[in-house]
Image (cartoon, rainbow, N blue to C red; front, side):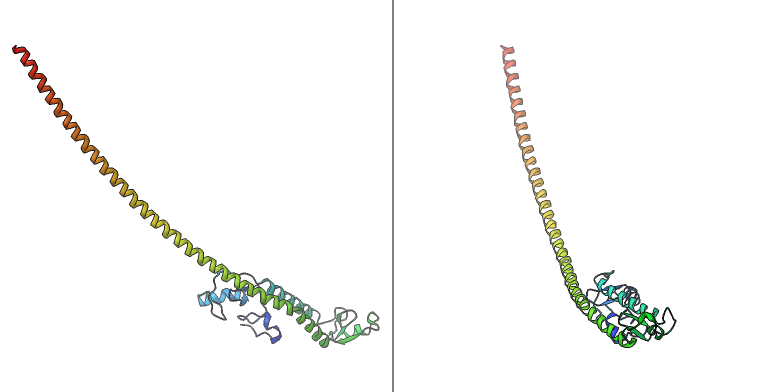
Length: 235
């Protein structure tokens, strides 16, 4: 864990590494962390929960917090720029003043040069405080927008989770209904097949009885015919 962020930079610092956010991602609970910090935390804890509020994340790959990423990149760019301008590029002297006319830091040699004749100057720390105040005023509406966006995202995530649960419930209901329908159709099929077999059995029995009756009738006719033939022969 690195050194804690100064209070003025607290909103731009990851709660895990305590440094300026790098590729910040936002969880459904609206807390943001560096992408790598969160992955390392999850690997160590073996659970996908928020390091702050312990709420379990519904996503294995949380979305990038673009607004916060832009804020941090702007801050880092300004900080790097301040570091690179610590010495005057023309005279290699320490930058102690800020030229209000040129809106740039200058050294004492620059102040006395012709280029800055009759220009207005401030101590560089005073100018830095003023610019910092202006930067904070600029960042304030972006922070509010970020907070609103995170709130909207939480609602979207909750709605998506509700839709997912509702879809799962509907899927179970459909499966149960079709299961009942299949059972009904199977029972109906068995009942109809049983009725068909019974009807076939009855018809077969009836045909058998008719066939036997016809055979007896044929036999009776044959006997009658034989008797009549024999009578004729004897006459």
